[in-house]
Length: 337
Ligand SMILES: NC(=O)c1ccc[n+]([C@@H]2O[C@H](COP(=O)([O-])OP(=O)(O)OC[C@H]3O[C@@H](n4cnc5c(N)ncnc54)[C@H](OP(=O)(O)O)[C@@H]3O)[C@@H](O)[C@H]2O)c1
Ligand SMILES: *[C@@H]1O[C@H](CO)[C@@H](O)[C@H](O)[C@H]1NC(C)=O
Ligand SMILES: *[C@@H]1O[C@H](CO)[C@@H](O)[C@H](O)[C@H]1NC(C)=O
Ligand SMILES: *[C@@H]1O[C@H](CO)[C@@H](O)[C@H](O)[C@H]1NC(C)=O
Image 1: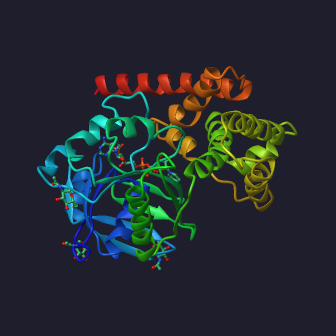
Image 2: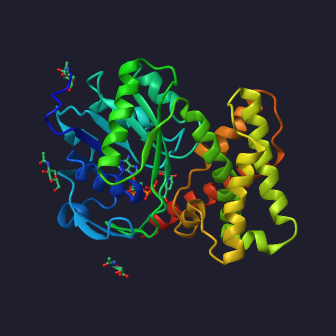
């Protein structure tokens, strides 16, 4: 067993908006955190992160170590590897390829703090003995410039659970330990028996609002006010998710859950506080967005079991077109420089 008196060693891969907030919480909880950064590496290495937040105030802090690549970890082993990069299933290098150099010890727990569905399987297949902890995040934050994170709400919840749900007790214990660290660091976290219920209930929100906002450039609230067909579209997408969840045996993804998710956007419409979903923010900034993890995986699952998801399939085809157009723009932009 790990020496309980030594500070937990955590490797953070992907120190963007979510990763930077979790880094703060883990350090508050006494962890020794090594962060692998990409585009914000130089800024973070030199100046650390600046977090402007309601929950933690305005604070500046540094990872215990800042690296620009996983390969720089050398022979070090970690208690937890926390993955906070966006999820891009099908991209190369794959997530298992990224993780391979540092997953050397079967007791290293891999925590996936990412949106989407069916994102765990490739990691579980590559590292069959390691605890795989699936995480569903409620934490609205954005990196506004390299190393600067804005997080203006109190909302902070990380739902955790092993993948698969019936993993060995040591895997469950690792999930409990990670959740205790997040709470000790000032956040909210809980361990669920079946994390897939949480993942699919988040999917109700993500699969409806991310495509709608990304394709219309509306906030969720503004879209609802834009025509009398708007609410029906969002609702029917949620009904497709509910039907799919029922078909594959994910329990508790009900009309009541959809109603409560839709009511959030309805309230924002009324109050004029609509939110620009992350996929819309990514599109505005010309950045890759999580079309495959959120919509592609859902549509493929539907096709696999012979279920028609006409609205989600339409969203997928349109968003995938947009995604490829942006990729082309980025390639041309980088060659014209
Ligand atoms: N932000 C939110 O409000 C929120 C809320 C709920 C859930 N989520 C989910 O949380 C996950 C993380 O989102 P985020 O908002 O934190 O994204 P983000 O701000 O884009 O951060 C991702 C970070 O990972 C880095 N990265 C990507 N690939 C990497 C690699 N191979 N090695 C090292 N670093 C790498 C990115 O670097 P580059 O800058 O170079 O790309 C970026 O700094 C996503 O699945 C998202 O859907 C986010
Ligand atoms: C794996 O990690 C555990 C806990 O940190 C440690 O006790 C064990 O010695 C490590 N095993 C190897 C082979 O490094
Ligand atoms: C890691 O960094 C935090 C915050 O700066 C610090 O409190 C802690 O002592 C450091 N841990 C180690 C093992 O250096
Ligand atoms: C944090 O910084 C923001 C923007 O710079 C400012 O509006 C806010 O009042 C600051 N909060 C605290 C607690 O100092």
